[in-house]
Amino acid sequence: MKESEIQNILENLGGKVSILAEENRTCKNREDAAKQLIKLIGKYISIEDWNSILNETDDIFIKEIMKEWTPKEFINNDKK
Image 1 (tube, rainbow, N blue to C red):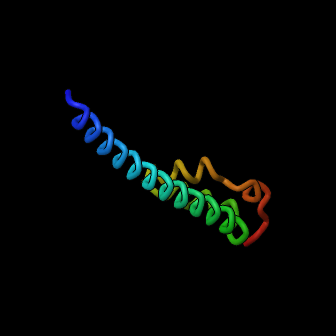
Image 2 (image 1 turned 90 degrees about the vertical axis):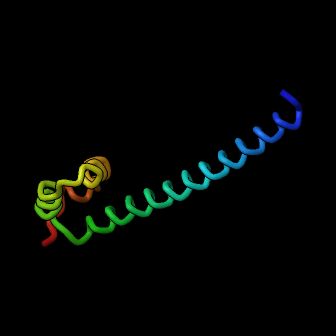
C-alpha cells in the first residue's frame, strides 16, 4: 500500500471520527436537556402523576429515562 493511499484512508477515518464526535456531543446535549426537563417537571407533578406516566407509556426509552432520572424530589413530592 502506498503512502498516499494510507494518507487517504487516515483522512477518511479522521472525517468519520469528527462526525461521530459531533453526533455524540449532540446526543449528550439532548440527554442533559432531557434530564434537566425531568428535574423541572418534578416541581409540578406528584409522584402519582409520575407513576401514571411511567405505567401508561409503552415506549421503552421513556421508561428507561424515567427510571434512571427520577428526581429525588418525586419521592417525597406533596404537590398536586
